[in-house]
Structure formats: C-alpha cells, structure tokens
Amino acid sequence: MYLSVSASRRLILMAYDVLFYLFAGFAIACAISMVYHRNPLYSAVSLVGVFIALSCIYVTLAAPFIAAVQILIYAGAIMVLVVFVIMLLNLEEDRPHSRLSYLYVVGGGLGLILLAQTLFVFYAVSSAPNHAVDQSETVGRTISIGRAMYTDYLLPVEIVGILLLMATVGGVVLARRLSQPQLELIVDQELERRNEGDEKNDYRIAF
Amino acid sequence: MESVLKTAFPFIVSTLAVLIAFQGVLMIVAYTVLAERKVLGWIQGRIGPNRVGPWGVLQPFADLLKFIFKEDLVPDKSTKFVYFLAPLVALTCALLPMVVYPFGPRIADPLGWLVPYVDGTAAAGAVTWVAEQARNMPLTIASIDVGVLFVLGITSVGVYGIALAGWSSNSKYSLMGGLRSSAQMISYELAMGASVIGVVMLAGTLDLNGIIFAQMHSPWYMRWFIIPQFIGFVVFLIAAFAETNRVPFDLPEAETELVAGFHTEYSALKFALFFMAEYVNMFTVSVMCTVLFLGGWYVPGLSHLFEIGSIPYALVSHIAFIGKISAFLFFYIWVRGTLPRFRFDQLMNFGWKFLLPLAIANLIVTVVIVYFLNR
Image 1 (cartoon, helix red, strand yellow):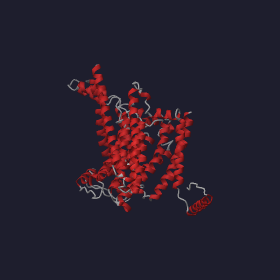
Image 2: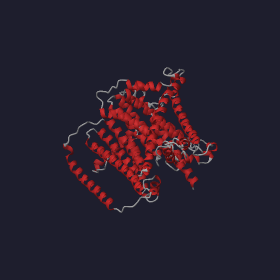
Image 3: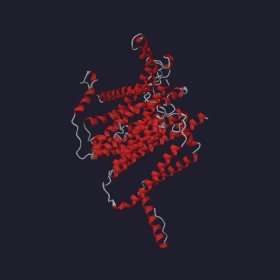
C-alpha cells in the first residue's frame, strides 16, 4: 500500500515537472525570439508568448489569480496596445547599428546584474528551509491577495493608485482636443512667455 | 496500482469531458449558424436554407464540406507565419474558456444505476470501481478559483487573432479591419470588466459555480443577479455585442466599406476558423451572461421536484442552462436582423462617454450597498 501511494505521488510530481519544463522552455524560446527578431511585431507577439507561458507556470504553482491577472493585464491589455501602435506606425525595418553601439555596454552591464540577481535567487531558494505549504493559505489565492493588499500593504496600494490616477489625468490632458480659439490662446501665451524669458535670460522649460 | 489508477482517473475523465464538451460546443455553434440563417430569413420574409436535409438541418455540414474543398488562396505579399497563426489564435482563444463553464450541478452518483445491470458478469468489479470513483462528479471540466478572470483574460487574448490577421494579410482593408477591431475590443473590455465586478462583489467569489451558488442562496428578491444588477446586465450585454464584433458593432467587417474587414484575404478552412471563432465567442458571452446574471443552471424551485444531486435534477438544470444560452443566442440574431450598424466615432463615443461611466456609476452604487449589507 505504501509503495503504491508513493507511486501515484511520483506520477503527479513527474507530471508537474514535465509541465514546468514545457512552459519554461516555451518562455525561454519566446524570450530569445523577442530579442532576436528585427520586426517589432514579431517581437511583440513573442513577448505575448512569454507572458502566456509564465501564467501557465503560475497555474502549476497554485497561483491562479496571478496567472489570470498576468494574462488579462499584460497579454490582454498592454501588449494589445503595443501591437496596435506598431501596426499604426508601420516602422521601418532597419536602423543603422553604429548609433546604438554604446548601448551594448549598458545592456551588457544590466545583463550581468540580472544574472547576479538570478543566481542570488537560486541561492536563496536552495538555502531556504523546506516545509510543506498549507493549501488553504496559498499566497496565490484571490482572498489572501486581497487581504494582504488592503491590510498589510494598504499604503503602497494607495500610492500606486494615486500614481495611476495622475498618469490617467496626465494622459487625458495631453491628448485632449482643444477648440481653435483655445489653442490659439495657449500658443499666444506660450510665445509671450518665451519672449519674456529671452529678455530676462530665464531658461524655463517650455511645455 | 489501484492508487495510480485513482490518480489517473480524474485526468481520463477530464480528457473525455473536454472531448465531449468540444463536440457539444461545436455542434451548438453549427446549429447557431443555421438558426441565424433561418431566423434572419423569417425576419426578412424569406424561408431560409431548406434544401440540404429536411428543413435544412444538414446545412451546417454542407457548409463545412464546402469550406474544406474550396481552394485555399494565400496572398503573395502576406507575412506567412503570422498569416497562418492568426486564425488558430482566434479559434483557440474562443474555445479555451470552455473548460470553466459550469454546465450543471454535481451529480451524487452518476453511474450507480449501471451496477445492477452488470451484476454477476466479469465486468462487475471494474464497473463498480468506476461508479465509486465517479461519485460527486461535477459538470465542470476544471473548477478554477478565478473562472471569471480566466474567461475575460482568454477572450481578451483573442484580439490578437483578429489584429494579426489584419496586419499579416498586407491589405488595406484587412489592416483597417484589424485596427478597428483592436480599438473596439480594448474600449469595450473596460465597460465589460466594470459591469462584472458588481456581480463578483455580490457573490463574493470569482468562481463561476460559486456565483451560481451565491444566486441560489440569495434572498428571493434577488434570486438572479439580473434584479440587483440590471444596469450591469445591460452594460455587459451591450459590451458583449462589441466584443464579439456583432451587429450593430460589426465595424471590423463592415462589408460596405471594408469588403470583409480583417478576413478579406482569408479563404477556405482558414476563413471557416474565423467564422467558427466568432460564433464560439457568441456562445461564450451567452454563457457568461447566463451564469453572471441569470443564475446559470439554477432553476428556482427545482429542488422541490427532484432531490439535489440526483440525475433528473442535473439533467433538468443542464437543459435550463442550454435553454438560457439559446435565448441569448436568439437575441443576438434578432438584433442582427433589426438594428443598423453604428458609425465608428459613434461607437467610440458610446463606449467611452456613456457605457464606461454608466458601468462605473453602477459599480460605485453596488460598492455602497454591499458595504451596508455586510456590515
């Protein structure tokens, strides 16, 4: 009896392993294809693939809420906007490389930092004490996330909310369409202000 | 060995359930297409398809055969990989939410009636064992804790199918269709999400079965959430029309201006995939409407007739569920036969300046009411 119980447990664990390597491999393949593709639309689609693979991994880690939100927000909202903009702009295919040469150094440095972080995470996880997880209190469940957000982390959540509100208002202000007289008035005022600034040698930031 | 079988049993059952549900949904979709042609015919004073089989019942299969045997044209200048990927994405994202639909209540002993028949034969042991395992079988493929979010998330990924189809065809009409569709779906998703939150707050759960149970255990005056959430229901229904690109919001495929919109360059089976995806999406939003606002499979007073968990109870519930969905599908067709198409600026203004504020106002009122109810 004991043997057979462990056999079924092994079966489940093996299935989880197979799923993990499947999704992780898919995520890495998509990430590589995102970086290597010249065509921005291909890169965007690859990034969507990364998000979907990650959310599959979240599901196997018993965090369905995070998985659903990952798909809903990143794949379903943000990346759709990115694809939308790429389709609208119709970017040119190639750009000269020379202009970006210093970015290789910056990118390499950031990559090293990221690698160090990853290794640190590996180290931290492997040295952490191994204890069984209480299924009823998994952090990925909706109720525990909600409780944590509105008790322990209330202030950060509020701050993020205000930030997002500010960004929204800013976006509306920038994108609003003014009537012709209003527009002329604003342009006149701005020109006046600049001329004043020239006289006083005052370098204020315009707009 | 037995415990390995026991572990494997749910997987086998899920696989079978996926196959059955897949077939079922596709059949419903096929007959929705036929019903659409028939009902549109009646609305316009015609007869509708009546040549293939009696009363035209075999028409969907004839259509499918036609799609399979048509020549598959691929535009020369298209981006091949994305061009092939797009219809697959569209149909996959349309079909995936199927795994969380609550098709009916749990059945206490679904296979128990089989046992007396096989008594004494060689298969008795196996059948008894399977019947034992199948106890308390849910009529849901996978009970995900966050079913509502899952459905919303997957359907929002479906936009890529249309957007990529429009982009990869390398045709002006397709691109315009794809752009319109992405803009429309992003805009109406907000109102849709906001209208769902009201129901989720009343139910206190994101699980689709949990929402049905919450409606079951509500006081009589809000037995179905359509009563306390009527504004939410209207907003959801309108947004659902826009999400599925149906009349009066079918601008992505407005045939008078864009030929056929995003699927202009698609032919044969690839076009059929888009066509099916649209009808499966209709089915999905009908399921969501039914579950969120009309109590899903729940029939008030049915527990007085049959014992909860018995097979007739589950059967009647399931038929009620399909019936409610069919009513929504009929409503879709009815609207298509009745309303003209919006202009694009009207569509955007309606979505952002009317529907979204309405949904948010409904949300705020619901928050206040739920707060005082739970105090």
